[in-house]
Image (cartoon, rainbow, N blue to C red):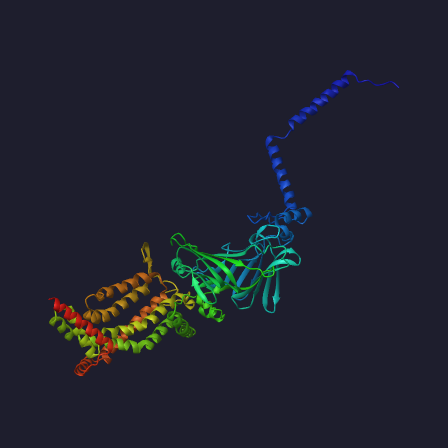
Length: 625
């Protein structure tokens, strides 16, 4: 067979075809932009592949989460165990992703997050803020709850960065939510929530099961609970004044941190504490007192014009003590009103979290004022209940006040004779005082007898001063022009802010100031000033100062308190006019005084001693002349 050989034309054809192919390849090579885009696409593919193999990188010093990828394969699980040790098991469960579980009853709705296992939202169903927004005590990350501990293999972990497995069940009518941070199917750290119907308080427990050899119990286990209080009232400054961190320690001792600035306190054997936000409270209680707690309160309202969202930041750092290698704390959580009746019904001393005054003032509020006002407001509108309470208090104090008015009338009757003494012994102040006391004792009339009844009324007045700002029943209750008796009533808006007064005009304080002025004029102006002694306060000055303080100080206070003072002073003025015009006969009192002056007057020991001192002083003065 004859072998075929390539001729010259065939060679030329192959060369041309190769040249054409090379030219086409050159023309179709990718641009630099296309190469960059392909590189970016490949990086995304690689990142997605990596995400399927690994989950969140969780460490005690700051864990970063990837919520969309859960390592189910052996490589991913091994990586989680390398980072978290035994607790890497929890990161491999389906619950290791963003999510919340809701438990609620007729009063409160709570949302508990898989991450951290604690409440991320607490809403009170029956209440609104001043601007008609639902009342949230916890929302949008304003609360943190973290248990920090070390493991047997020397890892430091924080529960706020780890994922819990939720399980919702029922215990009778109660809702039960368990949040478990697992190291195995039967070994875990558990937060347990149990919410009863129609209750703001719920059972809460922290315990560990089978972690004796997993958690290093020789190192401290610290529980830190932080909360930043939201503003709920019209005046953030007024609300902030009554927002305090209150706690119970050493079997019944109660204390609180300051209302302003930043304050830290360390206490032992703490049984409960309250993050009070004026009319609402977030409380943690424990059956096993915390051995040591570091409390911190920071006032966030530096300028009312700028700081308009939060009131205070609270923190409690608690030391938990394991027993037999396990934790087991039975506790309670309360999210609800700062209402004396509700708190007192728990019979755990929680009423001490209320700002009702100390000593006798708190006693008067708890056992007299609150029960009476609670009865009145059960069938009367809030404003009328305040007026009715004021009338009842005035009736109860009327015997004491009557004695005060009679003593003032006697002093007025004695004024001509007192003026004669001043004129007769002009320039001899010691003799004037001596003869004045002698006349007053003989007539049975003394300024002290007029002051003593007033002093006896002070505990009641101060108790009411502390009661009205804390009376939850007045919150958002309207009366006349006031739309909320627990806040100031505004009848005019000012285009500027007056220091100490504010940027608005409240009418109730103005009316109360006018009533106080007329009351002071009827008493101080006509009686006490007439008998003023050298060195004593200028009563005429006080007559103008008291109404002015009322006008300025109460412009931002609860209008219910101003309504009480207005009603109280109007009633007092009415009683004084009735006593003066229809009950007390000054001529009759004058005749009685003249009879008493003729009767021998036996001095008591104190009076004799005072007379002797004044006589000795007079003799020494004369001897020096």
